[in-house]
Image (cartoon, rainbow, N blue to C red; front, side, top):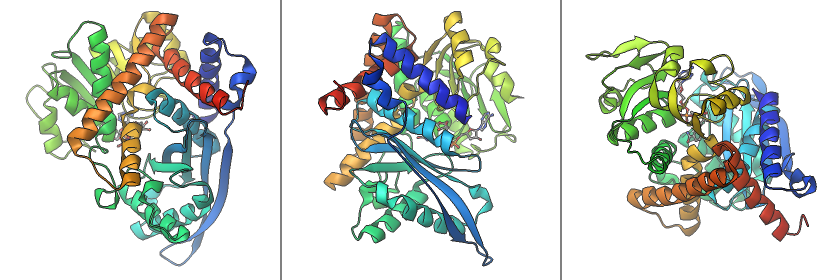
Amino acid sequence: MAGNTYANMLAALDNAAAKLGLREEEYSFLRTPEREVKGSFPVKMDDGHTEIFEGYRIQHSSMRGPCKGGIRFHPETDEDEVKSLAAWMSFKCAVANIPYGGGKGGVTVDPAKLSKAELERLTRAYVKLITPVIGPKQDIPAPDVNTNAQIMGWIVDEYSKLTGEFTPAVVTGKPLSLGGSLGRPAATGRGILFTAREMYKRLGKSLKGATVAVQGFGNVGSVAAQLLYREGCKVVGISYAFGALYCEDGLNIDEIISTGYQADLTGYNAEGVKHITNEELLTLSVDILVPAALENAITEKNVDTINAGLIVEGANGPINAAADAVLQEKGITVVPDILANSGGVIVSYFEWVQDLQCYFWSEEEVNSKLERQISEAFAAVYNTAKENNVPMRIGAYMVAVARIVEAAKLRGYVG
Ligand code: NAD
């Protein structure tokens, strides 16, 4: 995905800057990352042999505050991918109006091939590589693809040992007992509900009875499906890695989740439920489609089969640039990823604030603060898009770029 994705990011940045009337020298600092750490490190495997792994931490911008963004463990992770993801984080944090820049990290590894002990040794070795550039006031990682709360716990421990101070605020997405926040695991999916609701309010419609299809039933997709279902939507389709479920009258998402089948729904059966393919799920005629699996789910190859009234992007980059242009022509509104899936980073910010204060909030408090923050971000993007007669994706980039450039001007970097 990588090279292309970075080019897409640059195109969106240039487009937004042109709409804002910015001169190139006023925003060109956003075209390249501020700092790239790349290194390789040895890890002793269980059978005694040593393997060398490559890892990255890329800090795209710290203009609005410390860099913020996840760590990905994936066999195809490379520098270009991490670079694109780091830039997206700068824009996402600026749209959410939280006091962060953007960064991202990754290790080229297939964690499914490692034992738990090997994964822990790999994580600790990676922390040694990035410790000089991370910290609560410098760069705050979090989980991303194939990393989780346990891995964040090891990072807290290794970083605290290396620096000599217990520092839970160095990462977010931690276990609760190590300074994690209530509401963090469900935050991204909850943000999807809030942004869909805000969009529907603007359209003068209610979510009750709206038909929904969700691609991907993982952390983001399953929570989004469940919350939309509880809001009264008719969730007619959900897909997972090996297939999809469809029910014309609506699936019982609470029941599906309670069966513990989230990862593989091949064996799920209920009255009126049909098993369809992943591809068919994307073609369903629905009011709202939530792509919440991986990047590039909707491209020029399948965009003509999309039959949704509104698309709310749960995943990062699920629609490529060519498909985006077609959707725009067709008049299908897209709530863009850097707004729609920002619930996770917003609650990560709340986690960091709680860690720095050593004072923790109730789940209700976290959820209501999330609703306020993401609704304000939605209003800024929606109004900017409307006033400038541009799609919401460009509106979101305009909001982000304007906020980052304002910080750069106030700090004295650009005139
Ligand atoms: P996850 O691994 O928990 O879930 C992804 C799900 O998609 C898995 O269940 C997988 O089986 C399924 N899947 C894979 N290929 C599929 C396909 N072709 N069709 C249908 N389903 C498929 O990951 P996640 O945390 O839910 O993240 C999903 C996306 O959201 C990623 O793009 C991620 O970067 C983005 N995101 C996640 C968060 C977060 O807080 N977790 C925040 C912002 C953005």
